[in-house]
Image (cartoon, rainbow, N blue to C red; front, side, top):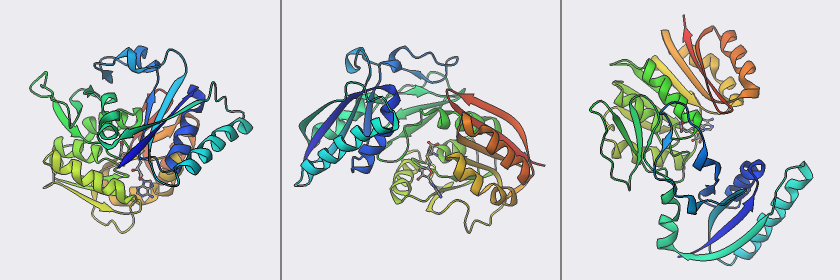
Length: 312
Ligand SMILES: C[S@@+](CC[C@H](N)C(=O)[O-])C[C@H]1O[C@@H](n2cnc3c(N)ncnc32)[C@H](O)[C@@H]1O
């Protein structure tokens, strides 16, 4: 199959909105070339990115690339994308140069084009995330390695919201625990929980693409005896008592199931919530307290917040 690469030179401000437009137009994944990645300071040694090549990044602004199948609708799809991007100006979003280029790539190029942006990343005291196509030698004997094929599901494991969850799991999960991962995406948090010694992990996601991706990654990391992946809405129909529940989902969604999480946890159980943008911090905190939790720790990274909350 032939694929078309659409490349949009824009601003930091417009990245999220344009990525959404591209997703809605049917692009499987987007690649973001942001020169900020080259110079970004990261906390201590966590989140260190190896082997970034400056030639892959623009000197100013951000380039977003996405891949669309070449079919008879392509022309219309591209026009719709251009229109939707122009409409962002109505919301006072600066779209910068808005230079859009289209080029054709063959399937082989497409399948590997985005891979050069994912490299092994140490994200916590013990965990390093390694893309499946990379070979990586552990630096220390107690380093835990998660191999990940991000495929179409969120994410690569390096998003601040995911990193904070892994750091929280590392502090929380004990040998023999039962863990529930709500909104598992690529399965990364469930895999981490299993590697930390959980005896049973339920990985749940509403999106069938995520369920397939998580199943693949769970197998790849050889934790399929411990982790079961199912399609499920939040904690609906879950009745097994858990020691830890982890959820990296938007604040609005977390607030919908804080009471269910409280009910499902054993006493002394821990609810790790992430995916909370700074402006929603207070709202989620109040929701957790109202449900009966105490806040043990608040983690922050960039604009994101995560809570480690305990059922007393
Ligand atoms: C931000 S991603 C987190 C992925 C992964 N846990 C991580 O930390 O990288 C949120 C995930 O929640 C899933 N999700 C959204 N609404 C959901 C719902 N109502 N029930 C279950 N999963 C949901 C999405 O499909 C997505 O995979």
